[in-house]
Amino acid sequence: MNADPDTIVALATPSGVGGIGVIRLSGPQAVALAEAIAGGGIRSRRATHRRLRATDGTVIDDGIVMVFPGPHSYTGEDVVELQGHGSPVLLQQLVETARGLGARLARPGEFTERAYLNGRLDLAQAEAVADLIHARTAAAARLARNSLDGALAREIEPVAAEIRELRVLIEAEIDFGETDLESAVAPEVADRVAALVAGVEALRARLHPARVYSTGMRLALVGAPNVGKSSLMNRLADAEVAIVTDRPGTTRDLLRANIAIDGIPVELVDTAGMHDSADEVERIGIERARDAAAGADLVLEIRDMARPDARAALPDLPGIPVLRVWNKADLMPGASVADGLLVSAVTGSGLDRLRAAIREQAGLADGAGERFSVRTRHLEGLENVATALGRIRAEQPPDLIAEDLRLAERALDGLLGRGDHEALLGAIFAGFCIGK
Ligand SMILES: Nc1nc2c(ncn2[C@@H]2O[C@H](COP(=O)(O)OP(=O)(O)OP(=O)(O)O)[C@@H](O)[C@H]2O)c(=O)[nH]1
Ligand SMILES: [Mg+2]
Image (cartoon, rainbow, N blue to C red; front, top):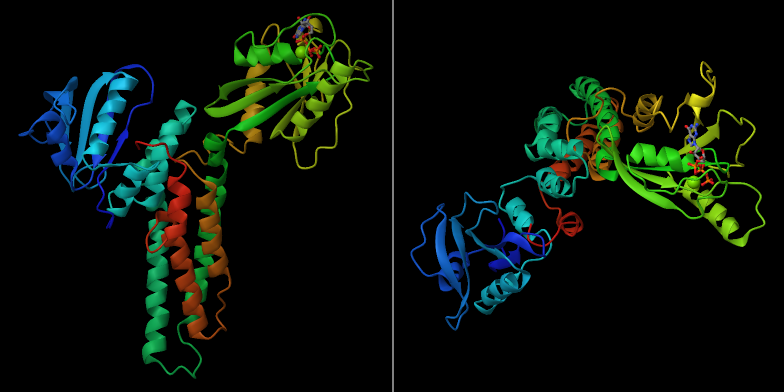
């Protein structure tokens, strides 16, 4: 249960001008405060049109008041939404009026934190709320939506159930058995644990690639001058982001474009053509190009089909995959390449294959890992479960086996925020916006 008796208030819609703006209140005084602002006798779960007044009685705005009594509300507490005109000035006055009446300004994510503390959401679902709000592509939003429906809990529930059963087996023996004798159940427990470890690791491997839907991917387009880096960026972005000319050295600085490739949020970074240059500005640009390559998740090394010798001296890129892309295919009809992909920024040929290759680089073979939004925290949690279970051996004393089962269970509980996870909560909810 949320032990904080404060009633909190915040603007729930983005700050700025809009058709409407919504103020949200949650806590024991929410209804009383709303009635002080909008007048008494508001019926629950109905849209009621009222004048919204400051404490001195002056009308701030008129709008819709909605009361959602706890526990069947978003936070599990009494929640009130005041919908006014979308004027930042008026909405601020409403927030200030609620504060003057005793409400406290909500911290980022505090509404969702209360929902979690009151058992309305598990921790993975609370994270999904943030992921949903911040989703950069429709695919990312769909995955977050699935998470909000409890997808992670469903995946790990069978693991949790099996661990519980094994704990019962081994602890019953500790409690009632002859502890100095060899454990009778340890071999069976060890066998079942081995199967669990394999299952948890498979789950982790399956979920891992889905992280990219929230983290996104950074792609650097690098190569010699004039090979068509900027043209390719414009083509992929479907916009004239970069200047294109037939003069080598057109791009001098980094240029960025955010696009989606099969639902993956991708940041494209166009760079200056790499070559030996005496020009100071160009040299700095080339240095930036190298840095961009070193900071990328994937480097697209662009080459020119018509000038195969025009190549860039790429910096050392340990651990960063490099995909060679031969551009200007249209100039060499019928040609093929053995190393990399053949595309034309002008005609668009080969770009579907390029997109597929990028998706593959992200670890997303068809349909893999795509069921719900995955955070690094979830993957680390699963790793901790597998590590604790992986220590268990049939030859060990039962109390050691029981201890590792307990640790595995605790790691699993941490995924959904069951049990005591104070430090974790702060870190997770700090990533929210105010009003959610
Ligand atoms: N035929 C043909 N021409 C292309 C293609 N892609 C780019 N070009 C032309 O190649 C020239 C250079 O294109 P850019 O996109 O500016 O090349 P860049 O690699 O960004 O060049 P720098 O910024 O100078 O390093 C322009 O004249 C483009 O129109 C292509 O696929 N086919
Ligand atoms: Mg360019």
